[in-house]
Length: 180
Image 1 (cartoon, rainbow, N blue to C red):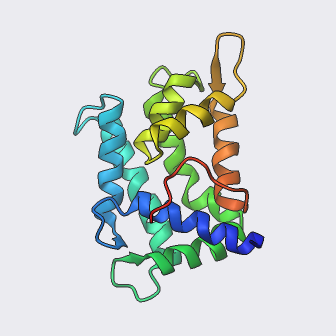
Image 2: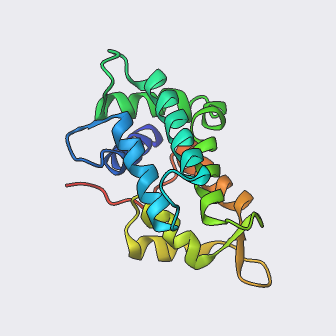
Image 3: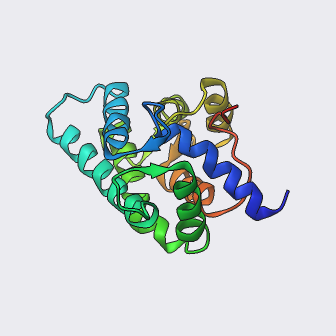
């Protein structure tokens, strides 16, 4: 399998973790549902400042993805649109990751790290990955591979580097289930 094929397959798998209602399209509603799922995972009170910040980050992510992917401007991103946009916008232009996806991932890590220390336990990394759609077993394996400091915490800088590599390279993904 070529790098391009591997990247497309990886993004096709990721699409399904965004299509939370399983209707074959990703919409703003799916992004809001994902934000609520992350918030629920970490005990965020609905309507709180943290909740509103997470929703704003989800909206930013949606707008960035829709600008790239929703070619027919119908408010829905199909799997083909998602994969093509990821390939053109994230894989071939890695600076797009910083504009589109990085604010969302930072917001998720902020919710997971309410004390603002800039690092998370391995168990928290597992919870983040599962909230984002990873399988629990895969999340545990991936989280355990992160380098930790002397108290067993993973820096958010390291996590964000891994997330960026996920979206911008053809390296195989192992976290998200591949639909049949």
